[in-house]
Length: 323
Image (cartoon, rainbow, N blue to C red; front, side, top):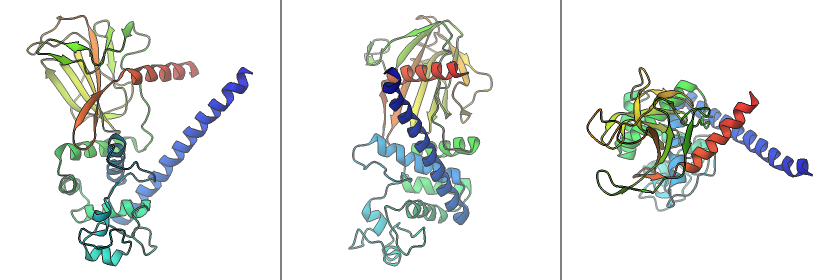
């Protein structure tokens, strides 16, 4: 009876994993196909696509991505601002009205819902600037008009290039599970030092010097001192989420801004730094302050990391049992 109840759940999980793997494979084929035609490296295309997909998930004013590609165009941007037919699919008239729409698959139509057309359209825009790193950055800035967005996309491209794959969803708990640690949901609690504010994270109490690990694939966006967080590190992952590690005792050797990290990689140690000028320590028990922030293309806000920490701990324990 127990087996019959559990089996559908196991099958559903396996099916979901296989479907997700198939999606990654299809996306990679799409990126490489566009790369072959345009000479734009696939990892830039993947980074732009993933950035847009994540933004659409984080915002309510944009439709969720339904196809392989996550890039969104407003109908008037696709067809051309002065085009009387905002649903135009004719490449000739779209070009006449300076629309972004492009026939990428050769069927004679520039279809805003066709993945190849969508990705080729953005590739054609970038080609007007060039295929080298610096010109791609210029093209991205002129499109998004936001330095942070350009930095996030370039960071994603670096991550994809280093690992050579799209399946980068694995996570690790921020301290070794076998270490003596404890935590509870402290997000939103009041904090008084430096003025009234809320606690934007979860405190994980552990012994001084316990290794602090990257929780996912990402790029080091920030490293240094903050009077609240002490020695701290910020890592941006491929889903536009910023992971904040504070009150560290120090940093891993040679850790630097712009470095790509992976789940479980040591980035520092648990400490009690902060609440004062550089070097201040010992004003509270040693612990890791772990925060998560989401960027939606306009702004960034904190959200509760506690459910994610619980889930990553369960996943890691399950993975360790299989070894």
